[in-house]
Image (cartoon, rainbow, N blue to C red; front, side, top):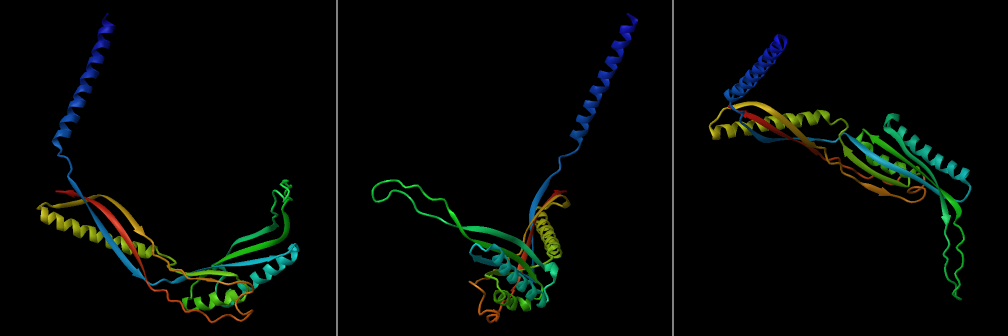
Amino acid sequence: MEKHTKEYAVVALVLVFVLLGFWYVKSYARSIPPMRTFSVQGEGEVTAIPDIALVSLTILTEGGKDLAALQKENTEKGNRVIAFLKESDVESKDIKTETYQISPRYQNYSCGENIYGVVEPCPPSEIVGYSIYQSVAVKVRDLSKAGAIVSGVVAQGANTVSGPNFTIDEPEKLQNEARAKAMVNAKTRAQILAKAGRFRLGKPVSISEGYTMPYATRFALDAKGEGMGGDMPAPAPSFEPGSEKLTASISVTYEIK
């Protein structure tokens, strides 16, 4: 009996401490006023001149069933294009073969009812030749050579050239500048609102951001066959990179004091 009495006393004591804990937490929460906040948007913008041009080119070779001859022809064109790029001071790290594809070309036959209303069987498709497709991505760092490179690769055997797309090689520094401007803009707006609302501006309690990448301009040049004028390039087009804007948007929540 005495043992059970001691156990009941321990349980009762634990319950008292639990109730006291709940009471303390509740009283402490009531003594702290709720935090008042408000949010503002800040924008930052940086204008920059593009420092690289991205050019995509393809070498398409089509012919008969002699696949080895087609591969040799396509390889020679591709090698001429890459050699020209390197002679134009484009580094190997800025030349990337993205696709090399060999596909059969089929002769399809029409079939159906003849003039007598009899359904004739359709013969199977027949391979009549092959197509070899090779695509290369190029990064041109000397923008003054972009026009000559676009014209030159066509003369060396590229069938299609897309670009140049002018952009910024390492945009992170500019992104940070836009973020900093957006943060300053958000704080200025918050100070104006605090003054108008007659309250003191507290510290930021949360920040979220978003930004947009620069828009890249595009120029496309298509050619058929061996290029424009054999080994002699066409007159080089003149390209202007212009300027690009990178913007950042910041949403900041401030404490109201």
